[in-house]
Length: 151
Image 1 (cartoon, one colour):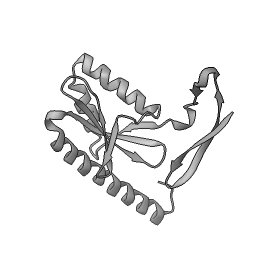
Image 2 (cartoon, helix red, strand yellow):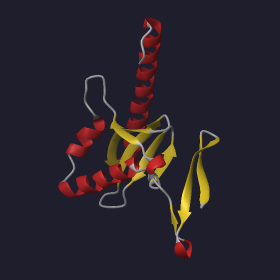
Image 3 (cartoon, helix red, strand yellow):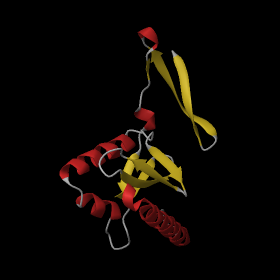
Image 4 (spheres, helix red, strand yellow):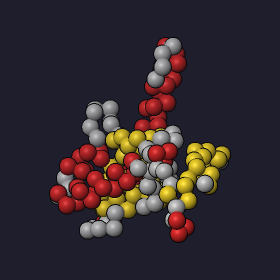
């Protein structure tokens, strides 16, 4: 038996005990590394991620669906983080990307998607969407505190 953990917000957390299997294979339970994956909703109720996803062909949509499932399972190995957002790279076709951000420790917000060809424009749009989301969330919290209700 081995105790393991991960570094979250500068502190060790989520310790687990893993069983050491024969021949040095380690089995790590994924239950503590799961995320709730949500789509960003704009004030008008639309979702930039859903609009992008709806335009994909069937095979591309399946690849993106697998990537989203991996995010939910805590697999962030294909994510590069910068400017407050993450870019999940799908090494297939035109180089699809999913743009996301973490809202706290357990929620991933899907901001949109794109391809390598439009990468910089897609990144800039995702950063603007994420900043707007944080601003709206802060305003909602401020209003709920002023009115004595929970957000």
